[in-house]
Image (cartoon, rainbow, N blue to C red):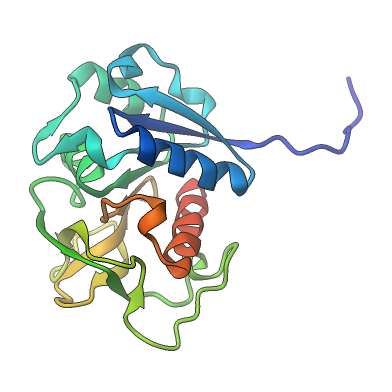
Length: 211
C-alpha cells in the first residue's frame, strides 16, 4: 500500500477522427490547455481499440454523414466501453443514429448558424468550470455561420435534456443530451472558429458529459 502522493491523474479523452488533421490539432490543444489527456484514434483503428481506459469519447464531425458512420465493428467497440460520448456536428449525429437515439439520424435537420438560445439555466453546463453569462439571448458561439445539425424537440423525447435551442427555430436543439451518456454539440466548425463564449461552453460541455 502506498500513501497518497498528492498528484492529480489527468482525465483521459479519446478523439475518434478520420482525416481533418487541423481540427484534430485544435481540439488537442484546447483539451490539453484544460488539463485533459488527449488520445487521437483514427476511425479505422476503432474496432481494435480499448476505449474502457478513457473518461470521455469525442466523435469528430468529419467521421460521418446522415446514415453513414464507420463500420459496425467500430460502433460496437465504442459502445461496449460504456463511456460517455460527446458527438460533434454531422459525425456525432451519424454515430448516434447508429445507436437509434433520439439525438441521431434521422431525427434532425441541417442548416448553419452562429448562436443558440439557452435552456435550463440552473444546470452545471452553464457554470462549471466557466460561468457563462445568460443575461441575454442568443449566445453567440461562432464568429461566422457554422454548418450545424438540429434535433427536433418540439415534442421532447423522453430521456432527452435540452441546453441549447436553434436561435431561429425553437422547435430544434443544437446542444442536447440523451440518457446522461450521450451529448450532441450540433456544430461542425473547429475551436478556432469559436467565440470566447463558444470555447468556454464547449469546455463546460466536455465536463458535463463526463459526469
